[in-house]
Amino acid sequence: MESSNILTYLLFTPIIGSILVLFLKKDNEKFIKWTGLFISLIAFVISLVVYAGFNSASPGFQFTHQTLWIESLNVSYFVGVDGISLILVLLTTFLTPLTLLSTWKAIDKNVKMFTFSMLLLEAGMLGVFISLDLFLFYIFWEAMLIPMYFIIGIWGGERRIYASVKFFLYTMFGSLLMLVAIIWLAVYAANQTGAFSTNLLELYKVAPTITRDIQNWMFLAFFLSFAIKVPLFPLHTWLPDAHVEAPTAGSVILAGVLLKMGTYGLVRFNLPLFPQSAVQYAPIISALAVIGIIYGALVAMVQPDMKKLVAYSSVSHLGFVVLGIFAFNSEALQGAVIQMVNHGLSTGALFLLVGAIYERTHRRDIAYYGGIARIVPLYSTILMIVSLSSIGLPGLNGFIGEFLILLGAFKSEVLGSWWYVVFAATGVIFAAVYLLWMYQRVVFGEVKNPVLKEQLTDLNQREMIVLIPILIFIVWIGVYPSTFLHMTQSSVDSLLNQIAEYVPLIK
Image 1: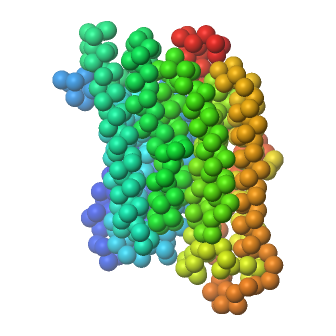
Image 2: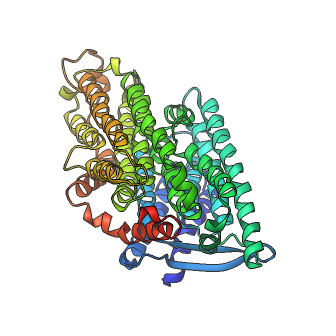
Image 3: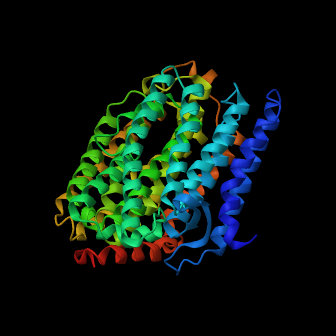
């Protein structure tokens, strides 16, 4: 493969695959499932080739490819990756085939359209992470909404229509503000350089020179779009509904990858394009992040539904990521990036485990269970490992991300107060409370409900194939995080140096 085109091959693999699926006979469901899985595995292999050829010591974008697309607007098909985007590309291609495999028995209606939607969704997510042109980025950002809307709306629960419409409207509202800001930036670039441009690398040079008042408005337009996607308190209300009503596959991809598009947008666009505004608003945004950490944990603590508990835990955990981003130092930003991956793995696995037990009993209420360790010991063991990883137990993946974020926030000159760390750290304690309490009520004690002995069977071979790769990375990142931190270090340092040109405080 030509290195300059490899990202294009990666992007178009699921797009072409989704089109191929449309030509398959809808009655041949097994073949459709195998086809979707095979295509997603090809995309994963290509992403591994990108990783193998990536030079982690180089801070710039690699494997770049640029072709003029819309000549009249000077818009290009421009793609590339740095360490930050590459690690999220790998997360996307890693989770997609596992998610498809997890739906082997759960999705039994309109399999053809489901597989088509999942592959199209993968392409949209990859496009967001590799786009270096703001127009192209916006196309993928919006295109991703369509398959996710149908995944929730067709294969979701009883209130699926309500949840899918709410998800769509929230995201669309923020996106329109971002579109206005993109157009304004392109016109500003034309006034400064004489050429209308949506090229991100060119905008990096001109955007920070915008007057402070205008820059603040531009920052807020981008920020609102990304904050809704994260979601940051108090813009989080769409998430629990979307998670609860979505099928397991939708919840895994939503938690594992889609929410990271919001935090990725903050890192890729808000910080380098509007550095002065980012530093100005950092204390307020960090305060909202800390409120989200505590609020999400407290609400999760009182949830009677396992899936809703995991959904609110996402609000709490993503608050840590936002806190790390706006601490403006290497430790915190490294922690934020690795925590994006950690959350995708741990929360994705929790949704898979909740989905596995739901497939057997069609019940998610915690009170229905109790003592299942006696019936499904393997399931109970893996649920314990994943729960501990989500809590942040040392030796598992969640610990290193939260530790780096709290360390960086403590040292942050921009935040200027260790109170952020004190209050954020309570989220770790609360996480232990709601997850271990849920685990104790579901797994330990006597079997409350005798019918569970007939309903429940332990994890089967297919489910183990889905979960074991995730468990490997949960332990790997926990024991030896340098493998992943090394990938992003140069890109993180380069970003901070880029911001420091305009905001000397963070040097």
